[in-house]
Length: 640
Ligand code: MIC
Ligand code: SF4
Image (tube, rainbow, N blue to C red; front, side, top):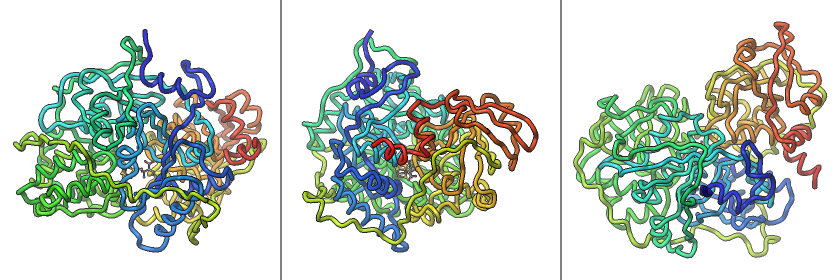
């Protein structure tokens, strides 16, 4: 018997706890990343901790989300992040340098190291054998301050890849197949470790597509071994010295194992409005398409866009289709420009966007009314595109490009193009848009625009928890439902009072008003509550509106941590009947919450319908103390 790769990395980074089933551990974090839409808040929290410069091996701040500068807000936030990064010892990747995950993979990733990022797609770096996890901004700020990162010991599931992909079938189809089999909650408390002979048929960018979208499984992270293909990538990035070989022991054991035969895979598609709503492209081919969008941290690598350019070369985008393309990084864009591929793309009639998240986060390119949009992205949650009536489908770059030409959804295997690419032995290396932190940080003045408002801080927990049920929602509610993002709202990520007016906007626009009129209250939800984005704002806005507890059938990992960090109780229903017994605006009370914290069972009385029910508080002792203190900042201050 031997160790799998995940256990090896965890063991090398273990700071507290024991690696055992259902255990909770603290690990050392080597690197952190932030992006601008969660970063402003993370750096405000870092400042509030008052720790001097960061204690990690390397921390990087990216600007890639809030790129449209329709008013002063985003530009001010970029300046805040640039100056605060410089002051606290953090590298700064300027707007225009690319999407955080793509640039991190190219320039900073390191096999065997740990990374947390204030973005749920941080696992992208698992493509080179990093143990990379998404986290709330506060947890990232704490890691920068040198604290351990706490996680539940995950189950390790091996995904055994055998065979080789057929022509026009791609890495995106592999992860869509995994999502089809396991669903958006199939990965909760698991790490997916890829292995088997099929691994070596996949390049690093292909592996990164898979680990990136592993986030949609609700997984803690996903990881590939680091092998000769990884070395190839590091050599091309002129970072051979960052490479080490990493693999599982020969007789490594796993908690679960799944096999995917790559030879059998077909082009796949996720239908609206969930990434696990997956079928074969052929099943709905000929659906009329209005918009095609290629890019995002899932599919914007040099390799992806070279394939797209080969498909588009000498052809024209269908007259009824708007094709938009956003390369993942400046490195990718410049290489395409220099080798002529960009000219082929432009000549086809594609619209070129800047190297950023763009339409993936609703920063422009919202589809028209009832529009059908095919996207190479990772999320198609309701309303995320900016158009509530739009139908967003997730596909591979091959399917997207071929469909853009035909004007209807097309199985790319219908087109006969040679997509083999000679990968350059050396990528174009120019790190001039990555700014080093100041050598003398006392010289740096942090610029703070007027849109940056203080963030809400909870009060220590009292004797009871009492309130009205302000909203009752179903299963799989995403943080996009709780705290929507689009080009109009994203500029206010550092202004919680304003943002909170839009909390649950696409589900129930009356929620903020109801919360204010009732002096806060309780949220009731189904399974997998808070899946998707890591945005802490989905906890901060409810906190600002006075939410004291969320009662759900189950929680997503990152959102649960965000609730705890903000002192909001995450409670799990014991049975379906309890969930069913509660109605909107019922008044519920637990009159001895302090005692309940010790027992980990919280008993509620429903004053409105005179019933009772129990909920479970599945927290570690430290998390209970954080809740008692009224959130992480109070806890850190009390314990320093
Ligand atoms: C996303 O893809 O949903 C985002 C926007 O990148 C988020 C971060 C955010 O909400 O700012 C994420 O994935 O964590
Ligand atoms: Fe950006 Fe979209 Fe990736 Fe989120 S999923 S980091 S919005 S490209």
